[in-house]
Structures are given as structure tokens and as C-alpha cells.
Length: 470
Ligand code: ADP
Ligand code: GLC
Image 1 (spheres, rainbow, N blue to C red):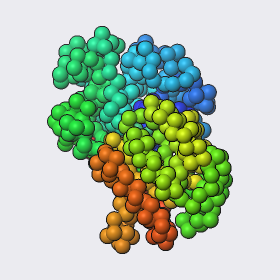
Image 2 (image 1 turned 45 degrees about the horizontal axis):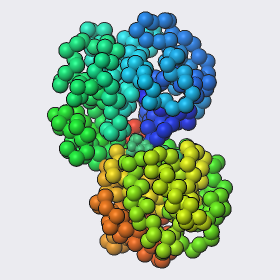
Image 3 (image 1 turned 135 degrees about the horizontal axis):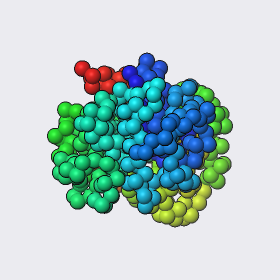
Image 4 (image 1 turned 120 degrees about the vertical axis):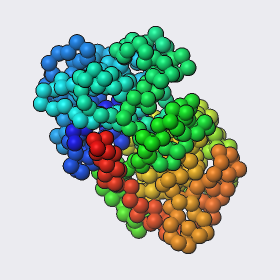
């Protein structure tokens, strides 16, 4: 199966969140499962500099220029970069005034590849990720309507909250027939929606956990698109993300001061000591809680801040790595409780690894969470996740209830409602378990034994791809 994966991010070159991790791990897993993936990405400087063996495809008026080459770490999987000047800006990939034009152009490049732009290779399937690749699904549908290509499409939603909304006046950039700007097309309350373009026109839809696949069909979490998602429910699948074991494994992780496996708790304790020193935290017998996330409304930082007194009173400490609108309040807390609370306002991959290893609990009290990778990394590193029962968090963490502890199924702490009282009770459960070290170890072992490998996810995606040709 020849699959063109279209995404805006790719670990380790350009990453703002979990999308980058998925976009990097999935094609390798697909290839290992026998598929023939290639990648198409915007020509951001970080990618352009890394591209090896670059060859330019013949010029095309609708898109381009397009380079084909390879990226280190991708085992020879061919990569196309849209080397357009609008992507050749350092700094953030999104949030530019010409985003609609930039990502419409990226979509056009994807479609040209489906139409045979690269003479030696045309995809049977376009796998488009998030709003940045939504336009491509509509553009491909138009190409097919004109019998210019036969490529099918799968659109994967990583986060419905980011929709790629633009003024209606930008619609012509997509090169679609005028009638497609309407209720049954890419129009969303008078605006142009790239997300809706994907949801409306892709042959199949998926999102990154079974839980979120259900939630986005409700008014509460549907971000205004739940009606459309309910209508397309038969085409919508929930496929849980995996963990890339080549990157996330405490036994081999080069970022850690000491590497460890389940049972090597002294080595994990050394990671904790080193992390405390790094953040200037005092020594303590209590558990070390951590947040590694975009500090946005989604991630539930208000709960952490509201219940900070209880966390500290019981001897806990907190390290936070992240940037975003909640950072100032967190910075204030770190100042007030110096030695017990610390904040690094940065995007720092290696530090994230050291935190997952050195902390005891990783906090993810999200309002909503399509899948979540931080809690999966926590599990893998024996750092128990504390999560809200929502989206992919609910699908991946088992609470320390009495019965799940007894059955040795528990892997973390789960609370129900987005309310401080519920979160506080989960904190209490964590402190209670902390005072029972044997049980804590049992839960750590169970957490580390969870298998969230990419193999299973790749098989599910492959089955979905094949369905499109039956
Ligand atoms: P989301 O994609 O919504 O941000 P995920 O949990 O799926 O949430 O993925 C977040 C990814 O970004 C993880 O790989 C996490 O370790 C990483 N991450 C988030 N914030 C930072 C940061 N400040 N520095 C380094 N890595 C970060
Ligand atoms: C999004 C979601 C996150 C998910 C990630 C990768 O950014 O917020 O929950 O894990 O995409 O799919």
C-alpha cells in the first residue's frame, strides 16, 4: 500500500506537541508492517537543513517547488518538502497571516503527488493529519471528481479544538468549485474551516483514541462539528496512539543521568535526586509530581494550582515544564514556594525525558484530551499518571481502586469531573499509596509493563487503509 502521510510537524525537527511524535513514529511502524509510506511536509528551515540527497521535482504551476530526499532517522523513507518561501521562516510554524495560503498550497502539492507529479511513485492513499492537512482532503475530492486521480483519503483528527478557521474571502485559495463553500462543504458559520474540509471530504476519518471518537460526537466536545461527525459516525474510527520505543525507553534513554528497568528503583531514585538538584528543590521524603505540557486551557493547570496547598502540605513537590497562557500563575507559585515548586518555561525535549524519569507522578488533569502521550510516557517510565477520565486518558490509565489494586490492574490515578474536589481526592489516593511502598512498586511495575507499542496501531491503520479499497 503506497501511503502519502501529510502532516505539518515531525519529531525531532519540528514539534509543538504530540502530533510530531505520531507523525514520526507511524510511518516507520507502517513500513515495518509492510506498507510503503512517504511523507510530505512543509519546507520549514529545520527540515530543509536536515534533508539529505535532495532532488527537485519538475516545476508545477499549482504547487511547488517540491524536493524529494531523506531525513536522518527515517531509515530511507522518502520525504517530500514543499520548498515554498512562505514556509522558510524560522520560529513557529503556525500563526502567520498567510496560513490559509500556505496550507492550501501544501494541500495542492499533496494532490499533485496523487495525480502523478512524481513520475516514479503515486500514492494510493493520502493520510492527512489535523487541520493543516484538511484542505488537501477537499482538494483531492475535487481532483477525483475531475478524474485526475484515484487516490483515497483518511483524515486523522488529533485535536478538534484547533480548526484552521479563516475569513470566507480566503476560500478561492483552495481552488475548489464555488458551490463547495456551503453547509455541505468547507463553510463553518460564515468562515472557511480547514478542519471541516477534512471531516467533510475525506473518505474515512479517525481520531487518536476510541474515547475521543465518541466524545467529539457530542455537543459538549464536538466544537460545533458534532452534527457532521454524527452524520459520518460510520466512517469515524478511534485508533489509540503508540509510544515510540526507540525514543521513549528508560533502559536506553541517552537523556537520563541513570538508565533503569522495572525493579531497578535505586537507579530511578538517582534520576529523581538529579532532577531535584537541577531544579533547586529541597530533599524530601514525599512524592515528586510533574507537569510536562503546553500550559493551555486544555491541560487543566487551574486544578493543579487550586490544590497546590494540599500537595505541599502532605510533603509533595512539583516541577513544571511548559509554556503557554497559564505560565504566569505557575511562575508565581514557583516563586512563592521556592524549593518545593519549580517551573521551566521552555520547550526542552531532553529535560522532558529527565522529568518523566525523575518524577513519581505525572499530572494530566485535562479538560479534554484526544489521546495524550505524556501519560503514556509516564507509564513507560514508572511515573504514575494522574489523569481525568476523559478521551485517551480514560482509555489508557487504570485507577488505584481497591479492586484494581487487588487484581494488579491499577496503573495510576483517575478522577471524574473537572473539579478541584475530584482532583483533590485523586491526590489523596496518591499520597495514601505513597505511604504503602510495596503497593506503589506493584503499580509501577504494572504501569511499565503496559504495551502501547506502535505495532498494534499500525495494524489498525493498515486495516482501515485496506477497507478503502474493498
Ligand atoms: P499535546 O499534543 O496536546 O500537546 P500530548 O501529551 O499528546 O499532548 O503530547 C505532548 C508532547 O509534547 C509530548 O511528547 C511531551 O513530552 C511534549 N512536550 C510538551 N511540552 C513540552 C515542553 N515544554 N518541552 C518538551 N516537551 C514538551
Ligand atoms: C493532540 C492532542 C493529544 C494527542 C496528540 C497526538 O495534540 O492534544 O491528546 O496525544 O495530538 O495525537
